[in-house]
Length: 553
Image (tube, rainbow, N blue to C red; front, side, top):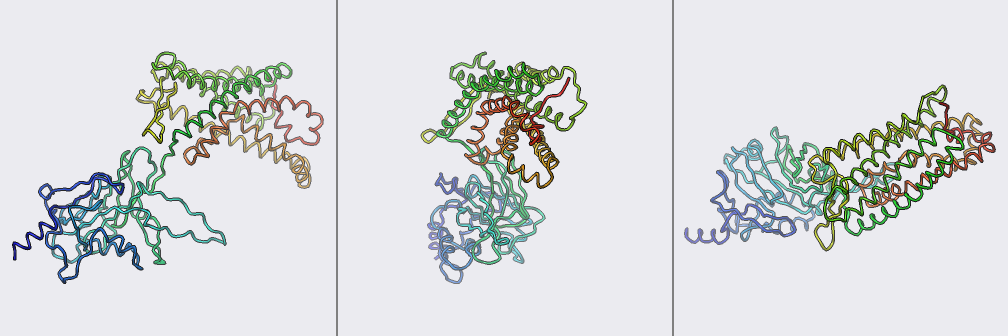
């Protein structure tokens, strides 16, 4: 009889199941031999094969999830209750870990290669309850996140709240169960490790919290969980056991088709900007001769910087097709970086000049004003680009693009070399932090313009006059504000939308590639201004005062 039982045990459970190598996509599975397990860990199924002590057949662990989903009760509670008493048939189950561990030691297991569970001994002892056995059953499984139904948004004041899209890392949820007692309010947290790739950021550790309505829905909660991201994995420290996941914000990637479309939009827009910027320079030069205003001189410098920026971008994009990374590509990368910095500097000076006009209206005297602005607008970019050139920052920059036929394709441009070790730091400081600060200041300046327009309107005719003029001249004020937005470079602020959707990427690309065209329209508006000054200044002082941008030396 004993020999028969031993044979049945060996046939039913020939080896221990300690986890699969892959996920629900069907990657290679991993089976751990009992001889290589650490002390205190053994197979929990070596004592029974097909029935419980009462003679009731055990459920197959493969069918527990489907059976619980088919019941009328809460499937999560059903799953937690049955996963610890089910039966494993065969050598292994995908994404499943079931072990007997010593409660006096920390337990560690891996249901998949992407998920690791570490439970301190205090949590295991608490899960044991009043039982005298030192060994505790530990179960860890991975479940598809689509089975977790979010509660519908509540109605607020007759309006339905738009649900927030919550994306789970890998689409997988890690379920952890230990012992026979609930495990909550731990002093030593349970550690759950979720591996991820570089296209994931801002991950947050959460657990599944059932709805109070007991309707099978719920929501993800962060209570009792802390998140640490070390670059390749999220480490969750939670004070309880439950269903765990990582909510994440993926980095928006561009496939090859959209990359080609965006490239064509950029090339065409830059070519148009070069053409219209040249015309704008001619217009500003003519205006400078007719009426030497300081603002026209600032617009002239900004147009020159934009011309260099779009021209250098096209040169860098086409010259990179050369095979070797020579001094020409490095020089073009320096030219592109210098042009970008010059454009940002002159955008900042546009905002500074507008500040002088609107805040310090009277008693302004700056000797050699344009010369000093030119030293800042051209000097700072030259200094920064020169230092970067000495440090050998520039060269070919490679950008990975997804493709349907190939895993990854590469797009290149003459810019900061991908081989430079501190490229990310230099790029962040000079092309992200500095432009963001300038755009923020210019947004404040535009807000000041809108406030001044409102004050001048109200002062011109009282509340009734303001309403009347608002109907008659609202389009003119909107045109002024829109033109100043382009001159101050506010479309560059749309860079933040490129991390959200394709629409943001296309909008940012179109508006900024056509910035030279917008500068041309602003130059045309300045050309037409003297013709309307006499007829509209008495009726509409607000827009004219904003457009009047000269002050004496």
